[in-house]
Image 1: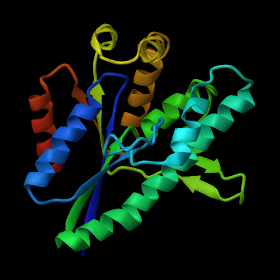
Image 2: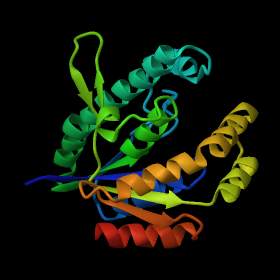
Image 3: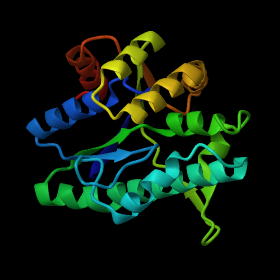
Length: 233
């Protein structure tokens, strides 16, 4: 029976999620194991420049809309839910359609769906707007077009890269990003660092989920070794 292992990476800005996903993706390739990378939360630009960001006119047209900070509570919730619904639909398509097709083409019985951010980040973003929202409430959204419930792709294991706030801010300063993006990320870290860690602690005690907190200050190769050992690949 074909088996797809859904593996998530979570953490705050500049914690090293992308580096670990790339290392694992490359390693799986050397083993002949197919993988795909998806966004579990957040945004993407739809430019086709990254493997998790296939070209999409919808994302290109709507990307700037999601970075509005003004607006009433309902407006903010609408933007967050639209993101959630779009990424969830894309994730289910990659999981149920595209990755099985690749497995068949490669003659592989196993594959990995790698998630850049997960339900942890979804709850984190929602609690910034609705502080008392539960995990269960954050994981369900109603599609206004057909009133159907939309569910996220849930990973079987999540690696949370834990890095002190001061180091994350310094990494932001050193990053080769656009100035406005640096300001946005640093502001988010300063305001919400403690909230994110509270959520990780909360979910880490929930036996429904397999969350592994990893020291994100280790060298990338050391973290990669921990990930491989945990996944037994």
